[in-house]
Image 1 (cartoon, rainbow, N blue to C red):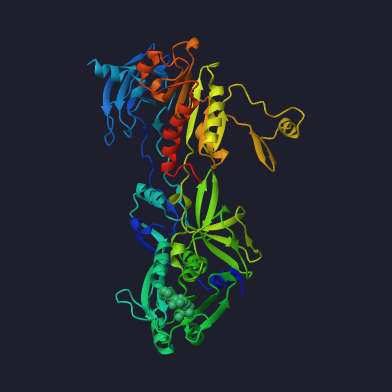
Image 2 (cartoon, rainbow, N blue to C red; image 1 turned 90 degrees about the horizontal axis):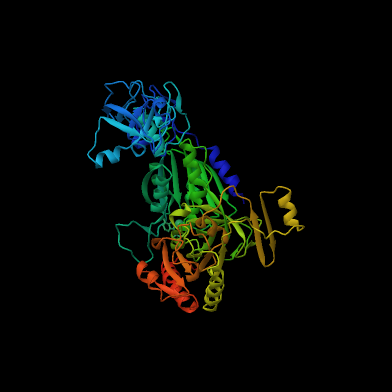
Length: 603
Ligand code: AMP
Ligand code: MG
């Protein structure tokens, strides 16, 4: 048996980077640039405005502010696409639109919002002058000629993969074509007497050929051009002929016929017509794998084509494709970065490894609370295609491991990117706000008790204006903090705490992911300035007013609910401070139920 790495290394040693071709830029997506691209122009070609506003001389705005504007004479207007016809002289300004060239004499732009343009417009006022409400520094909102790309500079170097943004850069340079490494043509042949095409009805003993389609889709996904050869039968002569049809491609991929069965003759054809490597790779699924360099049966054609013989089982075939064919295709396309993207995730199920091979387990990776989790997507038989259809990654259990237990870390090769599947949901959160001494802490305590009694898992979050006092002098963590550590974390069998020094206060939305995801509700005390939903605690003797505006509030809790001033004036639900059950009902109905209904809070 050889390792996955050894097998891959051998395969890659037989594949070469293909030659370049020149094509329209839009056909180059995902291909590798085969030329250095220099710019023949400056971008932007002229100094121009970054804002809709007034082009002026920065010096003229000296001392301008809202209460004492500087007035300039408006001497013209310039829109994007035209050239200014006038100069900006001292004491004057030219109305200018985003992207329009900066007139001579001007060295700054002040946007409309910082002028009295709107008031003039609404009062039908005088447009021959404009009031400037702020001081402008030189070059304010001016985009300099060549600031993005200077004429003569190297803009895109050989080897760059062309994504939409690089294609945009080429377009901005006025290039309609690019020289790129061409896409490999990959011939695909399924083998097996049991296989029938999709156009035929199923007959006893037969199955539809699915590998051809999985493989062809994989080839396209990674940038190759699939050429479907159809189905090869399990006897030497017709199979040899079919294989020969694929030998003007850049690579031939067959599936099936490489195990130890009586009819597994792909390897025999390879042995006869090619230089063969026939391996048992130390992986599961997908142990048997053939690789060789096929020579044409009819010797007139000189090419030698790398042939990858994948196992027939549909999942083995796809997973071996991912491990061996994908890197080969990427190498032919000139790509340097050919490893699969990997994330480290906590497994949510046990995964066994009984025979010391590298296991690729089909998993669904989700991201919750800033952490990746991988759960097995179902039966792992190598013929069960639906469990890989449900997966977005392959958890890799090394050959040296006996398996992993739920809760342990694994590396997962991503088949797709995580965000497509399970983006992180915010925990439901409600803030209890109020003036100091209004009774909000006691209300939070009562709510925690009540909601816990009802079976909810609560995270309580406290806002403090005046520093944090939980790290006690003399303790080791305190000593680490004193020594200057940026974050100090302490973990024990049943608790975790950390103190993180910050240079700005975090928003609630930034804090909740750090708490973890195993809660049904975050009950926050304070945070009156945040944008989360709030319930304000009001106490009559501290005044009639509220600290939050009513639009920001979901409800009011007060010790004088009969006070019609509050109830009628704001049309918000009003609760008696002592009626914890009613407030908890309200929270359950408006925060918990709504959130869990969308699948947000549980797991
Ligand atoms: P083989 O490697 O040829 O022994 O095939 C192993 C298993 O994969 C058998 O059950 C085959 O029927 C199945 N199989 C082989 N090729 C295909 C294919 N193209 N589509 C679906 N199943 C296949
Ligand atoms: Mg077969």
